[in-house]
Length: 418
Image (cartoon, rainbow, N blue to C red):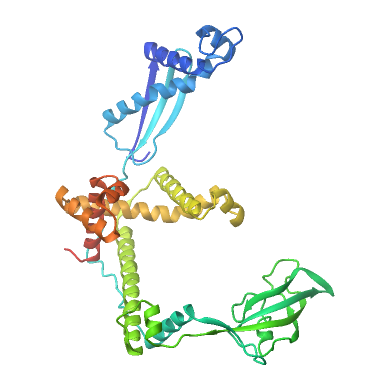
C-alpha cells in the first residue's frame, strides 16, 4: 500500500446504530404504502415485516458515515485529494462495520527544476507568410460574382452543377444532385472530379470516368464510376483591392498604404508566433522538470482527474447542443474508451500540479491578501468585467492566491526568476 493511503475501519453498534435505523425507518415510512395504515403511520415492526430490516440499511449508513468521516479526518489529519472510498464490511440489525480508504497527496521529490537549458525558439516572420496572410484577409472580404458568358471554369471557382453517378451501369444511390455548389480545389468530391471540370463552360455536359479511392466506403472501394455533370453556372471570387477602403474594412484606421498593411500584418503574425512559442517553451520546461522529479501517483487520483475532465467535456458539448451520448454515437466511442483516451493528459496535469505545488513549498512562495486583491482588480479590468463578477467566477481570494503561486513557480522553472 502506498504511504499516502490511509485505511480506517469503523464499527457502529448499540444506541448509535439503533438511532440510525430508527431515523432511516422514519424517512422510509413517510412514503410507505401498507394496507390498513396511512402513510407514515405504520409501526416499525409492521414496516419491517413487510419490507425487511434490510430496506433501512442504506439510509442508516448514510446517517452514520457523515459523522464517522469527519471523525476520521480529525484523527488521521489526512487531507483527501480525491473521493474517499467507502466499503461496507458487515451490516445487520445490531451493528455496521465499514472501512474508509483515504488518499492524501502523493510524495513528491523534486529533481532539477532550475537552469533546465530548454531551448526557446525565436519568432520570425517571412515575406511569404505576410503575403499569404494578406491574401487570406482578401479572401475573407472577397465578392462572389457570376462569370461572364463564355468564361471557363478555373481552380478556385464555384460551379453550380447537376450530376449523376453510375456504377456498373446502374445509377448510384445517393450519387446525384441538382444545382449543387462545388468549389473547385476544395477536394469535396473524389479525386479527379473537380479537376475534370476545369475549362468547362456554362451549359457543357461533361462525362467523368473515375475510380473510387481504396479508403472509400467498403462496397465502392476501388470501383470504377461514371459521373455525368452539367455546368449550370460559374462563380468566381473577386478579391478587394489593397486600398484605404479595404484597410478600414479590416479595422485598421492607422493603415494608409500597402507597406503599412504589411507592417501591421507582420506585427500580428509576430505576436501570435511569440505567444505560441512562449506556450511551447513553458510546456517544454514543465515537461523536463516533471521528468526530473519522482512521484508515485495513485490510480484513484488519475481516475478522479479523468472524471473531472469528462465532466468539463460534457459541458463543452452541451454548449454546442450535443449530449455525451450523441458524441459516443457519432464517434463510436464509449465511456471506457474516452476515459482511456484522457488518461495520459490527466496524468500530465497531475504531475505538473504537484510539481508546481512542491516548488511553491520549497521556494516559500506566498502573497498577501492585498497583493491578491490588486491582482483580482487587474484581472477584472483586463477581462472587462466587474470585480464582483470575477470573484464569483473564482470563488474566493484563496483561489486567486493559488493561481498566483502557480504562475510564480512557472516563472522560476522558466528561469525568469532565480
